[in-house]
Image (cartoon, rainbow, N blue to C red; front, top):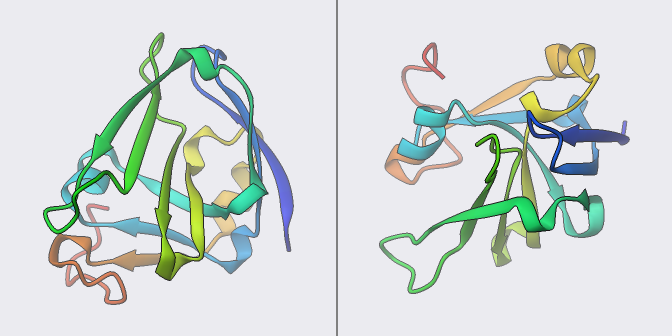
Length: 138
């Protein structure tokens, strides 16, 4: 069921809302970025994500895949408190623009997040449709 969630960084400089169906699943990946930052996410496609406040407080780490010539992912973080509430990307296979929302940055969504199914992805081997052999650390 699609619900609108509000989210923020630690200091509150960044405020957003997004429409998510957490019962449809969340994701954890074993690529170096996701595993090192414990990135537990859900995806908001197109206009299902809205930054309400704080664009001037955003810093952007842009990752360029070894097979791409420009960034496909922008990992945003608050320049004041350092929290990463969401990333933005664009992939044709994924339907265009999307935001990957850190579930830990959703405000008052604990029950929905706790009940959400998790899909594990083997990003370390660029096999996002497969589950890695070990997931306990993710």
